[in-house]
Length: 433
Image (cartoon, rainbow, N blue to C red; front, side, top):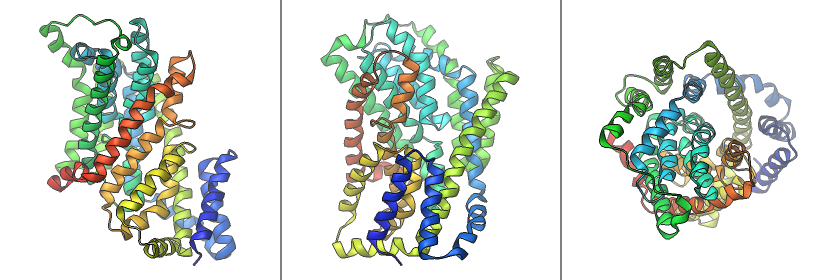
């Protein structure tokens, strides 16, 4: 066993490897390799093949490329355009006008794509020209798109929740259920924040748009039906016990292909582009997980989790103190690491401590996802900031950063609510399971 000091040195070495530009998977593997070589010897290193096979030989991981494929099909088939038009018809009269459409469209698209980055790129492409034409505040426009897109990893199905469940042996179904209420509450809070800002400063929301007639609004609901149907089918088959998350993802892909054909957006080129993107994204995620599984194995053999829990016990720190410490830890880490890498790299060390303190793994999964959401819009590495700026293709990224700050503060306040009332996340999974 090595002590907490040795573990801290290893973690700093891993971060240093990432900072100098090494791919995350390589940094994770090198950290595990050096630790095993220094303390355990060559026999442990020779077991890497077995660890790689056992880590990847998990049926639930098949759902990752399937959910990525589902999202890619929807992105390329024009579903987002119709969804945005429908919500703009229904939400345009609220204080803030089309800014509410950014949040609503992000929430619904997130519920079927499972990816924040895909949501930011898709909704940004659709919304930016419209809002620029109507002279909405660029800061609030870009901030609302970047923040709304973070809902992609909280509202199920979520690729990040699948990876968390796989690494911690936590029920994917319970994690998906636990994300529903926080996701809807956060969506409502984002819209309330926009309404308050628009009331206090009407100039940020542009001119008030004329209301649509009821027949027009009802007719537009046809555009919201496809993503809603896919969400109901995917989640319903899981909660009714008819399918595993992997099987439900496959059903969702079939539904997405059906939607693309119905909208006359299906083509061989669309299928090819979606497959290429799926392979690229899935290979990146699964390669990181290979390095993380080997690091997890080495950390366990070295006794780092036991040393850490003993250290915390000696300090006398309770659940609240550790959670507050983890908030600061992930806020700092989120400024310098991509969110998925941050989760995979820290879980092998953090999760045993969470279990030792008696923190519910399902609740902690939602807490961790919200921390990653904040990381997506925290400079200098926040991915959504760069995606939105890339779609915008003009001005300074500082506009996107300043526009995101109110939403970051709101998410931190929401994290406080989640700590005070954990039933926000746990009520629905307790009812369903």
